[in-house]
Length: 242
Image (cartoon, rainbow, N blue to C red; front, side, top):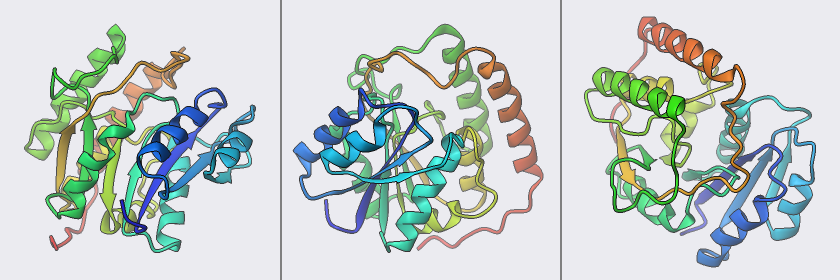
């Protein structure tokens, strides 16, 4: 991995996991640049990440997954990175597949590579979704597949690689601030970006904690349908493939 690539890790209360995540990346790529966006954590996520060698930006309070991601995108643009890998801070994403994702965008085979835990039984790993989450994944996977004209098996994955053109697109005001999932893939397609799924293995979160708990899944479903509807109404200038 060259110095033109940034690994972005949004993190909220991941003190127990962030060391393992960063260490796993550095075992494979000791000199890689890692940015942890600490989304208002109430624990020692930031200090642990700094000690293990990550760069840290701390938001003043919990602003949401989308805001944390967009903060990282803006940092990457300001620092002139050409490529970005995003992965979660809970240990679900296996760093062994970073190279598989990155090759797709560095070889210009697509603008965004999304890591799918469901497109290959061989690489599935230990991750198992709960019943309602699995239904949501299949529903929005089907909707996304129809709307972008290609099969999408894992529209909620946070394991992605992207090029600079996508980063420049993502720092605009249309990027969602809470749950950037299927709606973002539809947005990218309508803007002319190329998307490809890459089989990856994912693991069960160590603390088995999800952002989709309590009444959040109901809000998520409502918000995602609304966001997709609004996206289809929006006039989107298409970008030329380079």
